Image (cartoon, rainbow, N blue to C red; front, side):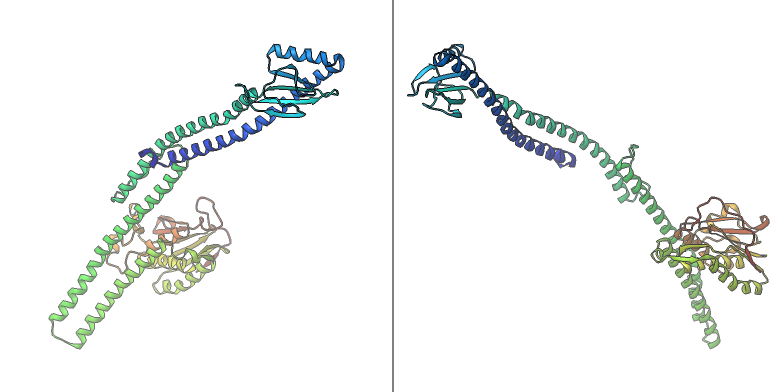
Amino acid sequence: MPWLRSFAPRVALLVGAVVLVASFLGAGWGWLRAQEALRRQLDLVLAADAEGLLRDYETYGLRGLADAAAVYARRGGPLRVLLLAPNGHPIAGRLPGAPARLRGFATLPPQEGDSRLRALGAILPDGSNLIVATDLALVDRAAAALAWSPPIAGGLAALLALVLGFLVARRLERRLAGISTAARAVMAGDLTRRLPEGGSGDEFDRLAATINAMLARIEELVAEVRQVTDDVAHDLRSPLSRLRQRLEAALAQARGPEADAAVLEGAIADLDQILATFAALLRIARTEAGAGREGFAPVDLSTLVEGVAEVYAPVAEEAGRVLRAEVAPGQRLPGSAALLRQALANLLDNALGHGSGTIHVALRPGPVLTVADEGPGVPPEERERVLRRFYRLDRSRNTPGTGLGLALVAAVARLHGGRVALEEGPEGRGLGVTLDLRAGGASTGRGLPEAPAGTRQDP
């Protein structure tokens, strides 16, 4: 049957079977216990009746006891009385199957179509034998009625389990059908497809939300891979084509040591630029994939920024620029010192290569790191784009560079749980790039803090 292939009906069927088996086992145990308890109560009743007859014997003698036995026999009620003479002959009453002499309790086999009897015998002082008995059919029927209660309840519970299992199976099938359809669409290449959510917030909704977040990340990564592939094909085609044309032109000319050396030096320079591009792409890819997070260690960012600023201050001075650093002390966070140093170096290289005026480096509590210059800046509509790989402004296409510096900075910020923001530089001029690393550090306040009084300034 197809419905048995579903998980919920199989579980419901198993639960129902277990309930039924347990119910019948409980019924057997209950029947034995109920029969034992009812028999004990019946023995107490027989003992009480026998005691009443013995009191008649003590008061009225054997003749009075015989008259009482005859009365019970004429009534035909559930209690039966038999009085036997010392030689075993009946004096009064009738009890088929009774032994010739009985002392204490005994169960008599059925006789003449009767059911079993529970009997109690007593020996009188004159040697006569008084036997009182009653039918066990009532006890058996009461025990059976009690014993059948668990199977009936178990059968109803099993039926309810099957009905609920069927309803749950139908609901699961609908939920899983939607998940299966979405999964097939994703497998077919539709990365925009998402798993349906029922809106109840149950385990399926939480699972669907988690998988949807994973699919969104996969879609983002695939889009980035496609973008990188397109960018690599576009941005590396030109230098490779120029390199080929230069080599072809050199081959077409007459051989000369000086000319050949110049061509080879130019070719090596172009290849170095191409290799640097690939190395930058590899660093970005490894950083965005989370490589290096397992090696995070406490980083003294204040010391790191001061060290990089000291290295770049002479470089800025040679270019006729001034580098000023405002470093808040004691800023620490878990991270990769090498990647943070590389990100700051990229920002300073961009400020030196594309900006002008004074370069401002500020590390504020959070930690929040800002590098700003007083150059032409970046138009607001271009600020998100310059964080992409290979994206360069039109005015920068003729300057050295790969267009990967800010992309690496953004990747390092994401790896450390932070973000990158581009804004105007000091006094509304130039460009300011801010690395907000508060998510990875000790502070979780919102908004970029002002530089505190007393921060160190390095000219």
